Amino acid sequence: MQRIDIKSKTLDELQDMMRQMEFPGYRAKQIYHWLHDPRGGVRTFEEMTDLPKEMRMILAQNTEIRGAQIRLKQVSKLDGTVKYLFRLNDGEHVESVLMKYRHGDSICISTQVGCKMNCSFCATGKSGFSRDLLPSEMLSQIQEAARDAGERISHIVLMGMGEPLDNYENVLRFLELVSSEEGMNIGMRHISLSTCGLVDKIYELADKKLQLTLSVSLHAPNDQIRSSTMPVNRKWGMEALLKACRYYSCQTGRRISFEYAMIKDVNDMDWCAEVLAKRLNGILAHVNLIPVNSVTGAEYQKSGIPRQKRFISILNSHGFPATVRRTLGSDIEASCGQLKRRYEKEGGVEDES
Ligand code: SAH
Image: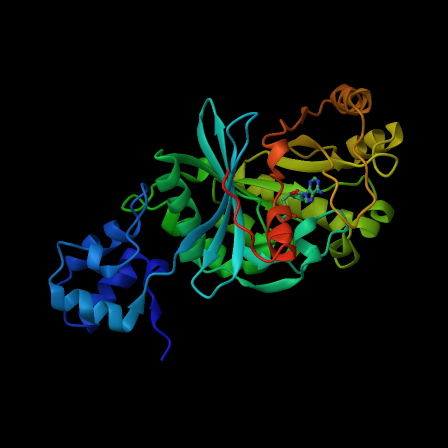
């Protein structure tokens, strides 16, 4: 019998569960607090010390706490960025990156084991797709990193392995749980969700009017370039995508962050910036340039700094704020998908750093 994934339940659902199991309703809040503690959260029912022993036993028989166990950890000597490889209950692995900023700790978490999207520059897609993550498994990445760092995490980016909008229901439930006052209480304005552009889901999300930041991985000024690096663009071209972005911004009043990985001689020419600026016209936008990380198996090179500056100045001259994303953890393969690939290739070698 499949046990219930208790950490993915909302407080209301836990209350219903208590009723069905004939436990007093107030137990739901106690359990919820144990499971959603921002400093870590319990890993076993035994640790729920204010519940009667018998109740803990019954919970353990019928439900399970899905967690994430640190298998590998790398700390950047340059900026303290920490990269984790987590093992999930069923033996699958995902990565998260903890970044330290002046405004607080921010964690980049995974939403799927692998990814179906197959962008040509991305390491995650190279290992294929295995499964969606459960809300509890997204929460556990944050809690285990917080426990390990001994710090409270204040910001979340859904920008690790996987396409969050391809795991829409679980991601929405995760957002509800992580922002709940009785839980980790991380406000939507402290959360970013990054998508390669699943247009139908962008509309659905827009109608929820959440105050999170939507990041759209654009990476190209036109369909020809975008389709050659991002297969998703063959399903929804740029025009449809940008129309959905306009709608999102109108519905939520939020500025959209466009991610643009600069690849030498592929998408970094002056005309690309000109065309990009034209196409973004009328959208409340910010452009985030990322010098592409080279991934084994793809032949891409980073654009040089003068090229990045030139690209920014063209976008600025058209009135778009644009920045080059600060590269954190460049010495620890901090872009997601890379650590897992190496781990699998080397047969699961432990790293002591
Ligand atoms: N699937 C989502 C989120 C995960 S990828 C998305 O596509 O947005 C997180 C970000 O890293 C995306 O902007 C993605 O395009 C970018 N990315 C992937 N591989 C990269 C690489 N080699 N160099 C730079 N950015 C990369």
